[in-house]
Image (tube, rainbow, N blue to C red; front, top):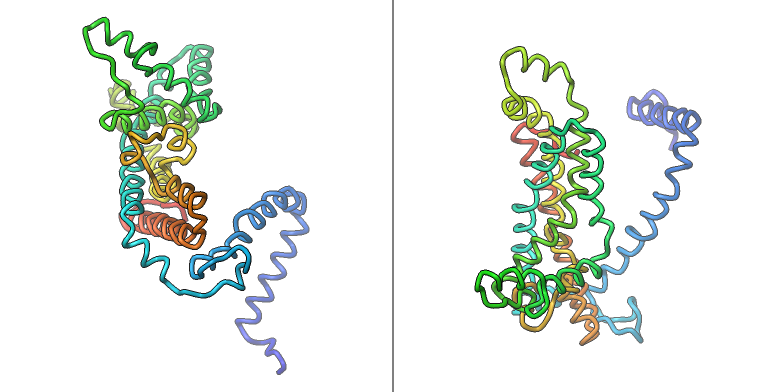
Length: 318
């Protein structure tokens, strides 16, 4: 059938194609630099999504993905009856939200403190020291804190002993393990988060501070009425991302290294549960269903939080 060249839809589509070709010719070097990242995203994020269909099958390695029998939503029904999955799901939400509530204010406060330092060299030293732990592996971080919190030779228990406190086995205590998990996560990553807020603070127009100073505002009121409103959108974006990462925010590497039998019920999360079931029982269909369920919950939280922020007048992420 012949195309109607006078059609507004066709003209719009044709114009878009011409604009895209023009931009491609003008910015070919930028698109060329983006190709490796795009290829990485396609091969390691989108193509593996093909394996999602395992969640709807009774997967057998010998039969392959397409040769395995379809069982529909049976694996998801099993999730609703699994006590261990419910416990892991509850722990994942609890630990992630504890990290978010305790961890979000720390980089903001530290960024505000660094912003008040006038000695540039000292400021850079403090900033460098604060974000170095971000680059340390959780294997190393876990080993450091296991030594520090050891009930026999650890520095913390040695100091507590000076005040007459009995040694506490923090890493095997159901009462203390979640506190240790949250503290180590904040210690490791607050310096890296500080960089984001410092960048936002740097972008504040100096004339706003000058106007506030002329109006008689001191440093504290300038922080409240100029700095904090200026970093509001940055905070919203970080908050939305943290909400979207609720199901992965508990951090598999950290929990895996700090987990042990005495504290399994307190810090066993979905990722460690999937890992354990996958290699203990080789039930890949069930664990794929658990992972898909977790991803859907995370995506729902991300979209919902973004919509709520935009509804309340914020900018959101998109």
